[in-house]
Length: 344
Image 1 (cartoon, one colour):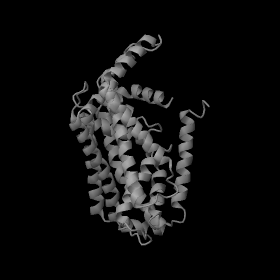
Image 2 (cartoon, rainbow, N blue to C red):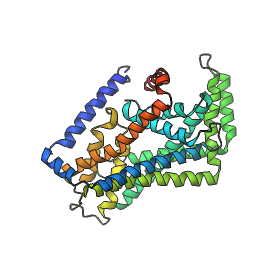
Image 3 (tube, rainbow, N blue to C red):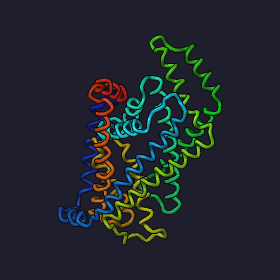
Image 4 (tube, rainbow, N blue to C red):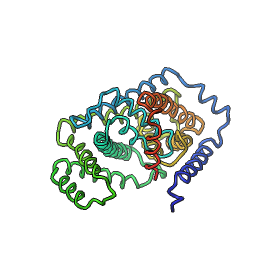
């Protein structure tokens, strides 16, 4: 069991999954088919897709600012942007998904600030789960989900609703949080540092933003922008490759449904263990999603490669630059230690 939980096993499993995914995505595709599909790319649409990715990142930063509100961690926009990009780079390149820990570490100046920021990031994940659930429900209303997207979505949606309800209840009943802290302080084991209580209190403070109706509206608005722009990016890459949906016979045009289904699949797929960059899994999910609409394998694979490159390469390069600006060389040992603990 200890070996199964080790980073070496997870990395090996990720390599295996990536290799199988690449094989499945590439089989029956010749070099000529790949070149023919790629040669149809219109680079003006690629440029618009790159711009769309930038808008998506900016919308996420604005939403994070709203979540932070007037809390103890007052962080400037530029630092939040660099911390977010650094977190994305860590998630993309490191086998364990420690980017969220990394961006809280990079944006905060001390332990209590970082605990507060981690609380806001946890809220962000809950909001994204709810947004994802709404997207899945929208797709379900317009078309049946393919077999490889099973009923686990209902469990996911139910979990997101319960987490959101719990966060709202705790935000409006701070006394419960206070009683929990008092109980924890009384029963805290000796080996647990006393400052852990301060960290938990700071994390609870991140829920205060949910008490404001105006802030809830702004969080909802910017979350809608984040997800709508992500769908728009998928659509722009379809236009860039001039992908046709001749095999689709549904009532709703595939040009509107395909970008949504791709996003639904990718959101689940990128959580699967894989090699850095999610190479293989990303492309295979695009092949599966577009196959629902009758798109041949070669153009669907080229679509996955192009979309992956547009989303992954610029943000990762910007994230690595942000790590250097934020002090990656001097803090390398601390960050690596934090990553190892997260994996354990």
